[in-house]
Amino acid sequence: MRATPQSSAPSSEVSSPDARTFLIAGQRVIAPRIVPGLHLVATPIGHLGDITLRALETLAGADLIACEDTRITHRLLERYGISARLKPYHEHNAAQARPKLLETLDRGGSVALVSDAGTPLISDPGYKLVRDVYAAGHQVISLPGPSAVLVALSLAGLPTDRFFFDGFLPSKQGARRTRLAELAAIDATLVLFEAGSRIQNTVRDLSELLGATREAAICRELTKLHQDVRRAPLHQLAAQADTMETRGEFVVVIAPPDPAAKVMSDEALDRWLTEALTKHSVKDAVAQAVEHSGRHKREIYARALELSRQRETGDGED
Image (cartoon, rainbow, N blue to C red; front, top):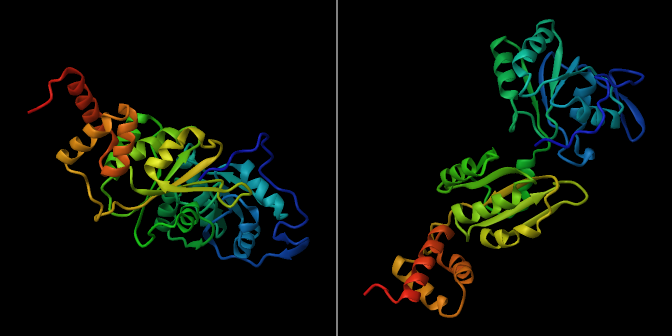
Protein backbone atom coordinates (compact mmCIF):
# COMPACT_ATOMS: atom_id res chain seq x y z
CA MET A 1 0.00 0.00 0.00
CA ARG A 2 1.15 3.54 -0.68
CA ALA A 3 1.88 5.85 2.24
CA THR A 4 1.09 9.57 2.11
CA PRO A 5 3.99 11.48 0.48
CA GLN A 6 5.63 14.31 2.41
CA SER A 7 5.08 17.84 1.16
CA SER A 8 8.67 18.63 0.19
CA ALA A 9 10.98 16.46 -1.90
CA PRO A 10 14.54 16.08 -0.52
CA SER A 11 17.54 15.23 -2.61
CA SER A 12 18.06 11.64 -3.69
CA GLU A 13 20.92 11.13 -1.22
CA VAL A 14 20.79 11.02 2.58
CA SER A 15 23.88 12.44 4.25
CA SER A 16 25.61 10.40 6.95
CA PRO A 17 29.22 9.95 8.14
CA ASP A 18 29.47 6.56 6.49
CA ALA A 19 27.42 5.23 3.58
CA ARG A 20 27.71 1.66 4.95
CA THR A 21 26.42 2.23 8.47
CA PHE A 22 23.11 2.72 10.23
CA LEU A 23 21.86 3.80 13.65
CA ILE A 24 20.13 1.67 16.28
CA ALA A 25 19.32 3.21 19.67
CA GLY A 26 21.77 6.01 18.96
CA GLN A 27 24.64 3.62 18.20
CA ARG A 28 26.19 3.54 14.74
CA VAL A 29 26.46 0.00 13.36
CA ILE A 30 28.65 -1.07 10.45
CA ALA A 31 26.62 -2.90 7.81
CA PRO A 32 28.11 -6.16 6.49
CA ARG A 33 28.80 -6.51 2.80
CA ILE A 34 25.78 -7.81 0.95
CA VAL A 35 25.91 -10.14 -2.01
CA PRO A 36 25.47 -8.73 -5.53
CA GLY A 37 21.93 -8.98 -6.87
CA LEU A 38 18.45 -7.60 -6.42
CA HIS A 39 17.31 -7.49 -2.78
CA LEU A 40 13.54 -7.22 -2.14
CA VAL A 41 13.26 -5.34 1.15
CA ALA A 42 10.00 -5.09 3.12
CA THR A 43 9.54 -1.75 4.90
CA PRO A 44 7.11 -0.67 7.65
CA ILE A 45 3.46 -0.16 6.73
CA GLY A 46 3.00 2.47 9.44
CA HIS A 47 5.15 2.11 12.55
CA LEU A 48 8.77 2.80 11.55
CA GLY A 49 9.98 0.57 14.39
CA ASP A 50 8.72 -2.51 12.55
CA ILE A 51 11.70 -2.63 10.19
CA THR A 52 13.99 -5.66 10.62
CA LEU A 53 17.72 -5.66 11.38
CA ARG A 54 18.39 -7.49 8.13
CA ALA A 55 16.48 -4.83 6.19
CA LEU A 56 18.60 -2.08 7.76
CA GLU A 57 21.81 -3.94 6.92
CA THR A 58 20.69 -4.33 3.32
CA LEU A 59 19.53 -0.74 2.87
CA ALA A 60 22.80 0.55 4.33
CA GLY A 61 24.92 -1.84 2.29
CA ALA A 62 23.22 -1.67 -1.11
CA ASP A 63 24.85 0.27 -3.93
CA LEU A 64 21.47 1.63 -4.98
CA ILE A 65 17.93 1.70 -3.59
CA ALA A 66 15.04 1.62 -6.07
CA CYS A 67 11.90 3.09 -4.49
CA GLU A 68 8.42 4.31 -5.42
CA ASP A 69 8.69 7.77 -3.85
CA THR A 70 12.12 9.09 -2.80
CA ARG A 71 10.48 11.38 -0.22
CA ILE A 72 8.91 8.49 1.68
CA THR A 73 12.01 6.28 1.54
CA HIS A 74 14.17 9.26 2.57
CA ARG A 75 12.15 9.62 5.77
CA LEU A 76 12.78 5.97 6.69
CA LEU A 77 16.49 6.15 5.89
CA GLU A 78 16.89 9.40 7.81
CA ARG A 79 15.31 7.79 10.88
CA TYR A 80 18.08 5.17 10.87
CA GLY A 81 20.96 7.37 9.73
CA ILE A 82 21.44 5.62 6.39
CA SER A 83 23.11 7.31 3.44
CA ALA A 84 22.13 5.84 0.08
CA ARG A 85 21.62 6.54 -3.58
CA LEU A 86 17.91 6.54 -4.36
CA LYS A 87 16.46 5.79 -7.78
CA PRO A 88 12.72 6.26 -8.44
CA TYR A 89 11.03 3.08 -9.67
CA HIS A 90 7.26 3.14 -10.06
CA GLU A 91 4.53 2.30 -12.55
CA HIS A 92 5.04 5.50 -14.54
CA ASN A 93 8.81 5.11 -15.16
CA ALA A 94 9.40 1.37 -14.73
CA ALA A 95 10.12 0.63 -18.39
CA GLN A 96 12.77 3.36 -18.54
CA ALA A 97 14.27 2.65 -15.10
CA ARG A 98 14.74 -1.13 -15.39
CA PRO A 99 17.68 -1.04 -17.87
CA LYS A 100 19.59 1.35 -15.60
CA LEU A 101 19.03 -0.87 -12.57
CA LEU A 102 20.21 -3.88 -14.56
CA GLU A 103 23.38 -1.98 -15.47
CA THR A 104 24.22 -1.74 -11.76
CA LEU A 105 23.78 -5.50 -11.42
CA ASP A 106 25.84 -6.15 -14.56
CA ARG A 107 28.73 -4.30 -12.91
CA GLY A 108 28.54 -6.66 -9.92
CA GLY A 109 26.58 -4.24 -7.77
CA SER A 110 23.61 -4.62 -5.45
CA VAL A 111 20.18 -3.03 -5.72
CA ALA A 112 17.59 -2.91 -2.93
CA LEU A 113 13.97 -2.65 -4.11
CA VAL A 114 11.45 -1.15 -1.68
CA SER A 115 7.84 -0.03 -1.99
CA ASP A 116 6.47 2.98 -0.13
CA ALA A 117 5.19 0.63 2.57
CA GLY A 118 5.12 -3.12 3.02
CA THR A 119 6.54 -5.91 0.90
CA PRO A 120 7.63 -5.15 -2.69
CA LEU A 121 5.72 -6.82 -5.54
CA ILE A 122 2.48 -6.83 -3.52
CA SER A 123 0.25 -4.49 -5.56
CA ASP A 124 3.18 -2.74 -7.29
CA PRO A 125 5.09 -3.12 -10.62
CA GLY A 126 8.17 -4.82 -9.13
CA TYR A 127 7.51 -8.24 -10.67
CA LYS A 128 8.68 -7.03 -14.08
CA LEU A 129 12.05 -6.04 -12.63
CA VAL A 130 12.40 -9.42 -10.91
CA ARG A 131 11.58 -11.17 -14.18
CA ASP A 132 14.24 -9.18 -16.06
CA VAL A 133 16.85 -9.72 -13.33
CA TYR A 134 16.36 -13.48 -13.54
CA ALA A 135 16.56 -13.31 -17.34
CA ALA A 136 19.87 -11.46 -17.06
CA GLY A 137 21.29 -14.22 -14.85
CA HIS A 138 21.47 -12.27 -11.59
CA GLN A 139 20.44 -13.33 -8.09
CA VAL A 140 17.20 -12.24 -6.41
CA ILE A 141 17.04 -12.20 -2.61
CA SER A 142 13.80 -11.61 -0.68
CA LEU A 143 13.80 -10.24 2.87
CA PRO A 144 10.52 -11.02 4.67
CA GLY A 145 8.86 -8.32 6.71
CA PRO A 146 5.76 -6.14 7.07
CA SER A 147 2.75 -6.73 4.82
CA ALA A 148 -0.61 -4.98 5.12
CA VAL A 149 -2.28 -8.09 3.70
CA LEU A 150 -0.95 -10.39 6.42
CA VAL A 151 -1.46 -7.89 9.24
CA ALA A 152 -5.10 -7.42 8.23
CA LEU A 153 -5.65 -11.17 7.95
CA SER A 154 -4.22 -11.73 11.42
CA LEU A 155 -6.46 -9.03 12.92
CA ALA A 156 -9.68 -9.92 11.09
CA GLY A 157 -10.51 -13.09 12.98
CA LEU A 158 -11.62 -14.78 9.75
CA PRO A 159 -10.41 -18.01 8.08
CA THR A 160 -6.84 -17.70 6.80
CA ASP A 161 -6.21 -21.17 5.38
CA ARG A 162 -7.30 -19.92 1.94
CA PHE A 163 -7.37 -16.27 0.92
CA PHE A 164 -7.61 -14.33 -2.34
CA PHE A 165 -5.90 -10.94 -2.61
CA ASP A 166 -7.28 -8.61 -5.29
CA GLY A 167 -5.39 -5.38 -4.56
CA PHE A 168 -7.16 -2.06 -5.15
CA LEU A 169 -10.66 -2.21 -6.58
CA PRO A 170 -11.45 -0.10 -9.68
CA SER A 171 -12.10 3.55 -8.83
CA LYS A 172 -15.21 3.87 -11.03
CA GLN A 173 -18.37 2.49 -9.42
CA GLY A 174 -19.54 0.55 -12.47
CA ALA A 175 -16.22 -1.24 -12.89
CA ARG A 176 -16.00 -1.80 -9.14
CA ARG A 177 -19.42 -3.43 -8.98
CA THR A 178 -18.58 -5.63 -11.96
CA ARG A 179 -15.40 -6.77 -10.23
CA LEU A 180 -17.19 -7.48 -6.95
CA ALA A 181 -19.78 -9.57 -8.78
CA GLU A 182 -16.90 -11.65 -10.16
CA LEU A 183 -15.40 -12.05 -6.68
CA ALA A 184 -18.67 -13.01 -4.98
CA ALA A 185 -18.46 -16.76 -5.62
CA ILE A 186 -14.77 -17.24 -4.77
CA ASP A 187 -14.56 -19.83 -2.00
CA ALA A 188 -11.87 -18.09 0.04
CA THR A 189 -11.39 -15.15 2.37
CA LEU A 190 -11.10 -12.00 0.26
CA VAL A 191 -8.54 -9.26 0.94
CA LEU A 192 -8.96 -5.90 -0.80
CA PHE A 193 -7.28 -2.49 -0.65
CA GLU A 194 -9.40 0.65 -0.84
CA ALA A 195 -8.86 4.39 -0.65
CA GLY A 196 -10.57 6.43 2.04
CA SER A 197 -12.42 8.52 -0.53
CA ARG A 198 -14.25 5.41 -1.77
CA ILE A 199 -14.57 3.22 1.32
CA GLN A 200 -18.15 4.21 2.19
CA ASN A 201 -19.58 3.41 -1.24
CA THR A 202 -17.46 0.27 -1.51
CA VAL A 203 -18.80 -1.13 1.77
CA ARG A 204 -22.36 -0.62 0.53
CA ASP A 205 -21.51 -2.38 -2.73
CA LEU A 206 -19.89 -5.25 -0.83
CA SER A 207 -23.03 -5.80 1.22
CA GLU A 208 -25.25 -5.77 -1.85
CA LEU A 209 -23.10 -7.85 -4.20
CA LEU A 210 -21.24 -10.30 -1.94
CA GLY A 211 -24.00 -11.09 0.52
CA ALA A 212 -25.19 -9.01 3.44
CA THR A 213 -24.56 -11.67 6.09
CA ARG A 214 -20.91 -12.37 5.25
CA GLU A 215 -18.57 -11.46 8.10
CA ALA A 216 -15.97 -8.82 7.34
CA ALA A 217 -13.31 -6.61 8.91
CA ILE A 218 -12.45 -3.07 7.81
CA CYS A 219 -8.92 -2.19 8.87
CA ARG A 220 -7.55 1.37 8.89
CA GLU A 221 -4.20 2.90 9.89
CA LEU A 222 -2.63 -0.53 10.47
CA THR A 223 0.22 -0.56 13.03
CA LYS A 224 -0.22 3.18 13.66
CA LEU A 225 -1.31 4.95 16.84
CA HIS A 226 -4.93 5.26 15.72
CA GLN A 227 -5.30 1.80 14.20
CA ASP A 228 -8.96 0.89 13.82
CA VAL A 229 -10.57 -2.47 13.01
CA ARG A 230 -14.34 -2.78 12.57
CA ARG A 231 -15.71 -6.33 12.53
CA ALA A 232 -19.34 -7.15 11.68
CA PRO A 233 -21.55 -8.68 8.99
CA LEU A 234 -21.45 -6.63 5.80
CA HIS A 235 -25.00 -5.32 6.20
CA GLN A 236 -24.08 -3.83 9.59
CA LEU A 237 -20.90 -2.28 8.21
CA ALA A 238 -22.90 -0.83 5.31
CA ALA A 239 -25.35 0.71 7.78
CA GLN A 240 -22.39 2.34 9.57
CA ALA A 241 -20.76 3.58 6.35
CA ASP A 242 -21.79 7.22 6.76
CA THR A 243 -20.04 7.41 10.15
CA MET A 244 -16.75 5.84 9.01
CA GLU A 245 -13.54 7.83 9.20
CA THR A 246 -12.35 8.21 5.60
CA ARG A 247 -8.78 9.41 6.09
CA GLY A 248 -6.03 6.99 5.11
CA GLU A 249 -6.05 3.74 3.19
CA PHE A 250 -8.04 0.66 4.11
CA VAL A 251 -7.67 -3.10 3.98
CA VAL A 252 -11.00 -4.94 3.79
CA VAL A 253 -11.17 -8.63 4.69
CA ILE A 254 -14.33 -10.62 3.87
CA ALA A 255 -15.12 -14.16 5.01
CA PRO A 256 -15.78 -16.88 2.41
CA PRO A 257 -19.38 -17.62 1.44
CA ASP A 258 -20.99 -19.86 4.03
CA PRO A 259 -22.13 -23.07 2.27
CA ALA A 260 -24.36 -23.88 5.24
CA ALA A 261 -26.13 -20.53 5.18
CA LYS A 262 -29.81 -20.90 4.41
CA VAL A 263 -31.07 -18.72 1.57
CA MET A 264 -34.74 -17.86 1.84
CA SER A 265 -36.84 -19.18 -1.05
CA ASP A 266 -38.81 -16.83 -3.31
CA GLU A 267 -42.07 -17.91 -1.71
CA ALA A 268 -40.76 -17.47 1.82
CA LEU A 269 -39.30 -14.08 0.94
CA ASP A 270 -42.65 -12.91 -0.44
CA ARG A 271 -44.45 -14.03 2.71
CA TRP A 272 -41.85 -12.34 4.91
CA LEU A 273 -41.95 -9.07 2.96
CA THR A 274 -45.74 -9.04 2.75
CA GLU A 275 -45.95 -9.25 6.53
CA ALA A 276 -43.16 -6.72 7.09
CA LEU A 277 -44.74 -4.19 4.72
CA THR A 278 -47.88 -4.08 6.86
CA LYS A 279 -45.80 -2.68 9.72
CA HIS A 280 -42.80 -0.95 8.15
CA SER A 281 -41.71 1.21 5.24
CA VAL A 282 -40.18 -0.39 2.16
CA LYS A 283 -36.74 0.76 3.30
CA ASP A 284 -37.07 -0.77 6.78
CA ALA A 285 -38.65 -3.97 5.48
CA VAL A 286 -35.81 -4.42 3.00
CA ALA A 287 -33.18 -3.80 5.69
CA GLN A 288 -34.69 -6.50 7.89
CA ALA A 289 -35.05 -8.93 4.99
CA VAL A 290 -31.40 -8.46 4.01
CA GLU A 291 -30.36 -9.46 7.51
CA HIS A 292 -32.55 -12.57 7.71
CA SER A 293 -32.89 -13.92 4.18
CA GLY A 294 -29.36 -14.40 2.88
CA ARG A 295 -30.51 -12.74 -0.36
CA HIS A 296 -28.93 -9.77 -2.12
CA LYS A 297 -30.30 -6.34 -1.31
CA ARG A 298 -30.98 -5.42 -4.93
CA GLU A 299 -33.35 -8.34 -5.55
CA ILE A 300 -35.06 -7.88 -2.18
CA TYR A 301 -35.63 -4.20 -2.87
CA ALA A 302 -37.07 -4.90 -6.31
CA ARG A 303 -39.43 -7.52 -4.88
CA ALA A 304 -40.46 -5.25 -1.99
CA LEU A 305 -41.35 -2.45 -4.42
CA GLU A 306 -43.45 -4.83 -6.49
CA LEU A 307 -45.27 -6.23 -3.44
CA SER A 308 -45.86 -2.71 -2.12
CA ARG A 309 -47.30 -1.65 -5.48
CA GLN A 310 -49.58 -4.71 -5.55
CA ARG A 311 -50.72 -3.96 -2.01
CA GLU A 312 -51.59 -0.36 -2.89
CA THR A 313 -53.44 -1.23 -6.11
CA GLY A 314 -55.03 -4.41 -4.87
CA ASP A 315 -53.88 -6.45 -7.86
CA GLY A 316 -51.92 -9.09 -5.99
CA GLU A 317 -51.30 -12.44 -7.61
CA ASP A 318 -53.84 -15.21 -7.01
